[in-house]
Image 1: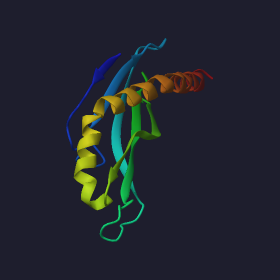
Image 2: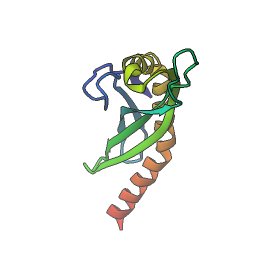
Image 3: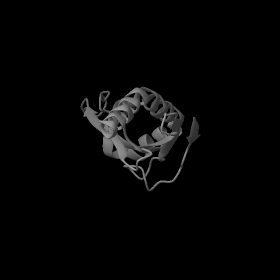
Image 4: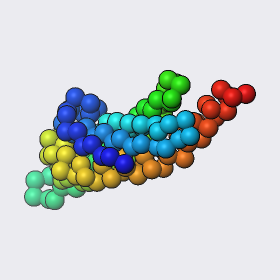
Length: 146
């Protein structure tokens, strides 16, 4: 398995977050299949609590979570394309005091610092997808033989 951590910003759903790409090679009787998993990050914000009168503590906070959307693409020896979309919610989460709008750049920076955690989730998704991809390949081969 080879892992490519692409820090190109264009492929990310939100341009503040690095893009991650994972490649793997799956052995198959008709020849090895290269599968590519491209990840996009989406961060959800939720405003909680309330601001308070001067002199009283505020409970205002922003909870956030980063979801990953992964698109798998692979090409069978016959040229058939095998693609699949996989989503994993809440791969990294956090909370910041104050208004969500005021903290978006700090949240984006924190998500970017935690890219290794997101990358680990993409690799785990790719491993989980291997059995699905093998089944798709077998089904494709079965259709070609019958």
